[in-house]
Length: 199
Length: 248
Image 1 (cartoon, each protein chain N blue to C red):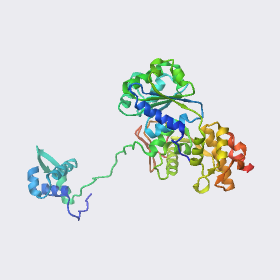
Image 2 (image 1 turned 180 degrees about the horizontal axis):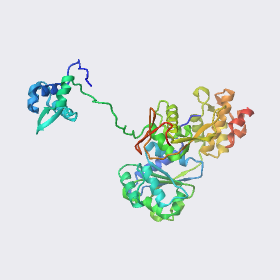
Image 3 (image 1 turned 45 degrees about the vertical axis):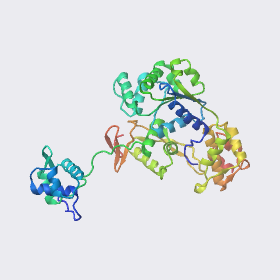
Image 4 (image 1 turned 90 degrees about the vertical axis):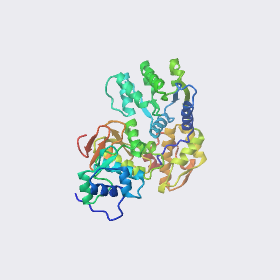
């Protein structure tokens, strides 16, 4: 897909790619430094590394770099550094997040209420933990991880119907399943379970 | 009622001081801690809170535990999928715990003491990785451990979970009770003393009593409440808010 050429001042990567695409020969870092003039040597090294990672520049020989065909094409279409496509990998679990602590509490207790989770998992830094936990338990319920029990725990308010009790059905591992738009991703098994799908 | 864990309660402070003593113990392999006390004094909730907030490994021993069952639960709790024989499970646990700074907490440890292999496996893990082991059970757990000198000599601390003191009851009342709009509910001294007397310092029962008193206060729309405003039944563990609605 053609990318919109940038209008602001080109950055170090764009400048290096411009030089290499124009010359289409292998240039050493010294030659690049001489060509670019004011750019610090460290910045040149780091930028060339990034261009190599993006496969726009290749190392033709030891310490000598040249633009690839893809690099020349990118330069023609208006090279723009930054992410080259959507991030499609799975997010690395955050070790001490609220949801991780909530999941751990569920794993330990098996049967629980939302207040149980709040008491055990919150550390006082969360903004609205009750709503967050409710949403998470609801998502896990729709993905078949949690089932609501028919009996309720006694509530505290005058007209309270009591607290809903839940049972954790799947103990897949210690990493908290991640809620997604239309399902839950379980980092323990690597599976994505759609809402309302097979439990 | 607010739902939060109170670390200022004496039992919890003593437990945390004990974990610190275990960390500071002179002999590195003496890294066992024993928590004991009757039911309702907050042992399990304290251990669960400690495990959740500190990222420690928590296991609840079961009456049906065999060595394999324990090792499989332990492997799952350290974050791996249990696969292979006991020996492989053991080395999975070792590799996961070594240098991680995590403790292993075993609640209801009486179940694990029926088979010496279970306790000895925990000892192997703590000796090889210097992982602190926290075991908890009913009163007399440390006396039972005394039968195994190789374990008892590794105990750096024994924490007794006892009845809450009047100051603890006051703290729980002040911090957890609330009325409409999240305003705090003030308990008169006579009411706090009566809650302490009737619940015999059991945190579980104190919370039930507070919930009942809170229901009465919400019904009457008051922000201060004393013993004269509360029927006696509200202070016992079987006080039921739905029943109290009719009494007020």
